[in-house]
Length: 511
Ligand code: SF4
Image 1 (cartoon, rainbow, N blue to C red):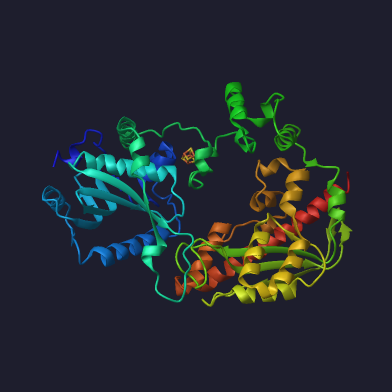
Image 2: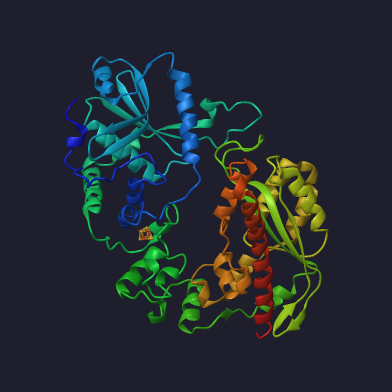
């Protein structure tokens, strides 16, 4: 060994914190990759946990299975890191899973290590299809640390999921399901000075008593929306310039130079898009924007009117045969139906609503029943309002799965109208705060439809809970409540769609 890994000068981290490089979901290292303030908050506001599905652990287990199957009878499997140096010195091949290098201040985990032909290969497992820059940064740090410890050539690899793999009733073929990507060249492009500097930054965050003053930015949503998203915005103006969507580099620079963070205080800006202009003006005038065209667009929709929303699951591992990793699997739909134009009461069109839905939590493949029941429920005439083109994309996938329904599905697609597109192009309310998500839009609608359930309050929650219900990975005492929450959530989504339509219809009459 060259030296003790843990004498590396950049690591006098404050105990009891442990830097665990591989536990990405709660990793302090990962926090730092998104933002140094997030790292600080993760360390100091421990009650705020990032709860995400445990896909990585499943992938890690499958990767371990792969290594054990492939190398068990060929190479020694090392379970103690102190054997590593001896094996490398003797040029004896080995592999090690979940190797942990420890000193009193720091623990480093490596998903898999394989020493073969005098080369040490580091493998980092991610529940993803495509390599991302921050995986390369994570690998570069792993390599940097080991190269300070061991005198050996090191290659770095990612283990991802092969999106083309087809699940069947047979056992998974791991050699085809796992996607091994050699990242050595990319990792080597990063300079070790930069890595050492980054490590020093991490050290400073660990030792600091004060939260860093990191400004909010695009990193707050990349790669995931940060847990502290609202927290970091609590002292900002209600209408922060961040709410101006699709900012180009020039616009960002312009806004930084102006040193104004409140949209209300912005001067007239040049070179902005019609949507950006509309949002800024709407906020500055505290007035909703309603286009002249909105009335005609809504009047062109035909009754009976359907309001449709799908819930799907997306999983890297097998839930049903005849699916691929990360392929959206349609499992539930919610449908409100208004058979004719309502009567105007206090400026709003009121009418009797009918409700229909489909779900199957039994663990059987729901896809055929999903489409058969939907075809029956939407009949053959009337507009079907959806919010985004997601449902159309799913319909197209279902048409490939069940070609016998292709014709009927195409007729349904032709009746679909995207209310998100209509809203984005023709309406804005300052309370949207730059977002057209149904959740943001619902803020101007009736209070009864707000998302305030215990278990399901977002599409992500719905997808995660659906997987848990279908795979029966759920506490039996909570199952009924979770099922009810999920059904209520789906119903709220389409009810919000109805209310948005009614709101647009009533405000457009004044134009
Ligand atoms: S919300 Fe943004 S600025 Fe705040 S901790 Fe998260 S990533 Fe950092």
